Image 1 (cartoon, rainbow, N blue to C red):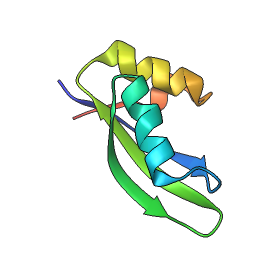
Image 2 (tube, rainbow, N blue to C red; image 1 turned 90 degrees about the vertical axis):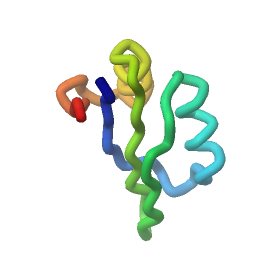
Image 3 (tube, rainbow, N blue to C red; image 1 turned 60 degrees about the horizontal axis):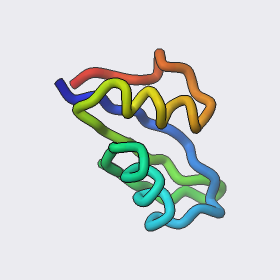
Length: 68
């Protein structure tokens, strides 16, 4: 099963930094959209524990995780 999480990330983080953050947590940066004041990103992983850890690091609720 594949899990995904969509989140707003501060605009001061670059796409490469966000991608590295995802990879450090066993996830993939699936989508990246630069907005005026933030970035809208979607992370994915086939491991629920990994995406939950990434969610915790972003201080988001696990309820934002969607299974695909």
